[in-house]
Length: 458
Ligand code: 5GP
Ligand code: SF4
Ligand code: MG
Image (cartoon, rainbow, N blue to C red; front, side, top):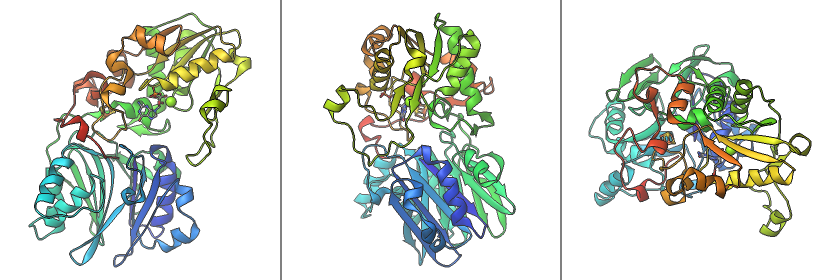
């Protein structure tokens, strides 16, 4: 998911619209915005893309100088309006709203405990437990109540929480999910990725630190923490797949990092070939790096149709078999008769790779060598990245040779963990260079609970 927030700008809702639109790749399922003019809360949420959910009238209706917004990428199939964010509740005679990116590993446990004590939940989203914890706090001021709630929850999260006169911004103690702060004139802006700041002309200030809680109100911005910083463990998949290439994560540009992944992958697994191609959009940067390193030309061998929506008619099995493709097409003149290296970011179930290898072969490729810019994805994510259960992860049960056969490739290599660490190039003195690689190495930065319960984050 993606979050966006503004404090202190008369056009908070319009800015948030453009900010969320820049974060659209982080979630296409639903979008929402909540604003306040200091008295009343205004909010609107809907299923679909930001540009489908909001129009000019709705943006005008969302009055005030403070806003938080959200785009949702559902995990665990709970795809309904109820779970669209921001979530808004009545709170001690006022209102409170929350937008999250991430997943709480102890939400189910806290929820059970609260339900036993009589709480009634409105959603199946784990974000709601945070609001319950705040509401039940014995503290008489909201700042301490939020801090207490944050201390109880574990996992990976970036939170934006607002009441009528304050905005709270918090990042889990491992900094698993990305969250940055910027300024636009006198206003503060917050976003999952820096690309949203470029879009609205805001200046990037810094990444939110692990365990940090920022409080913004009429007196300005205060930097506090709710927990000591623990092992920094930024999600490696943000560098590999999730973030947009023009974003910087912890001051490392995503495009450049992916390009280096391609270069290191070429060093680790050179193969003589005629063309290098990348699966759009996420693997173009890596394909350019692989080509630079090997001297083999980079070509656009695959084209993505940008208009594939969720609401579109999907081709039936029969039409698919007859060659109807919606999302990707091969460029026949580029690959025909050629030995092709196809770069992709990850293999999860293996269905995408198989489809693309076959597509390249049908377009006449003589050989298809698959190179993947991540280590084998063997373990589920507990921190808000949608992954199927362990048994559906092809690398959890198959060897690399077995996967090669399953995806019909002439050869297959994955970037090593060491290669990935080198390519991302964060500081050497931090464990795993400050990254989480749990889905590759099964070494999670927090304790993890029941895999079956790892459910509904965002
Ligand atoms: P597969 O078909 O192997 O299950 O999925 C791998 C493909 O899905 C890759 O091309 C990757 O770009 C794409 N993908 C979409 N969403 C995700 C995600 O949340 N995590 C990962 N690792 N890949 C994803
Ligand atoms: Fe990212 Fe993988 Fe860690 Fe999940 S387990 S936060 S996908 S690196
Ligand atoms: Mg892909």
